[in-house]
Length: 361
Ligand code: XIL
Image (tube, rainbow, N blue to C red; front, side, top):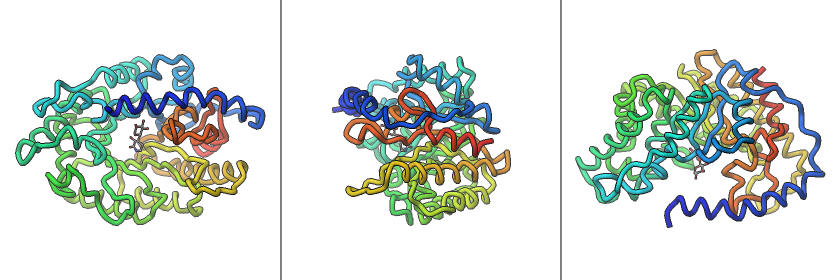
């Protein structure tokens, strides 16, 4: 089964259960807060991820046009999509650009900036590159980056060149098909050089998650950024995904933003969401407590970002606008109730939207 088929399967049960769940809990929801459009108050670009199918959903388009000034393709600019038919020269029939092209055209038509995501990621490409060794691997690696970053040159303002280089535990770099062929810092350095050659103007980001949730990981990531800078990599920014754990201690998210900013590069909060669930089987927190925790941590992160010097505020991106758009609300992961994003299923502001608006202002 391809990844695309899996996605369709995951989405199907949600489509059925989501509506009933929303109806069932609708009575319990307090009146949505009145919140000005986020992009109108933030002194920096505000973004969301997007899927090409959303660009023809009038409700999504209206909400996005009102709230954001930047887009990140959620999955259709990844190898997962572009290499779904395999790698040309390694049994594949050709690169797939139809969906990412539609997203690029939509961004242009809407006057929104486009952030490319992502060229090289440990989680993808192993199958498509399997069997390639030595110079053939390197050639294919370079060719992929040249083709993708070259195609969107002038259409994207920036790229996540390498995604998620640090292990979950956080004290070392990931061992993956890229590092095995090109070395642990080597594949990252090469990816940045190739991306720069393909697109001289894009701001090139290193992007990772749990940087504020796990301070060990945050420190390892920033050390890597410093090493890359010293090695002359054309790294132009730090991407912090910020899939935020709302139970981290107060001050931890702001501390990471300050440490990251000390390197002098622009910062992108690249994929913010903040689940109300913590994964444990017995979670006794009330809904009100969860919202309080979410508001406190999201507010702290957004305030720390807003407090940065203007030149270091690249953009603030949420990983979806409506709760029901969230990757945390698909298939088996969905509990029908989580509110990880600023807007509810109807596009009305959640408490999170009000918290962001307050911090941005
Ligand atoms: C997720 C998307 O939301 C899903 O639709 C996709 O199937 C898998 O990836 N870190 C990232 C994002 O950098 O690309 C991930 O997005 C979420 C975690």
